[in-house]
Length: 107
Image 1 (cartoon, rainbow, N blue to C red):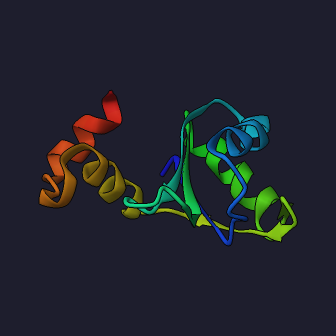
Image 2 (tube, rainbow, N blue to C red):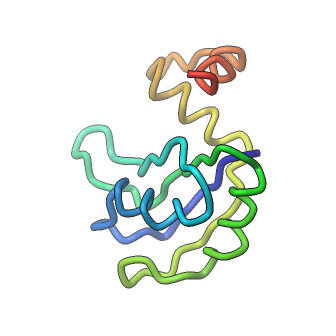
């Protein structure tokens, strides 16, 4: 997979901060800090997608347990969760299908 899951983020960390930090491993195609839908507050985790699997692997190996904004973050491969998040963003609570997620990947 070309996406990684980043958790234990500091609430002050922004999407732009993460994109800058992770872009040293390759072209970041999307960077989404997950936020509370009512308050907009960070839920302290994010998904970062890269152009290639190799770039995602490099970020995974180099960034796990690194300090970002005074918080030691944990990085893992996102597996199916990022596709679910894309569907949620696109379709809301109705979800959408696996095909919809694949279509969202191409957009």
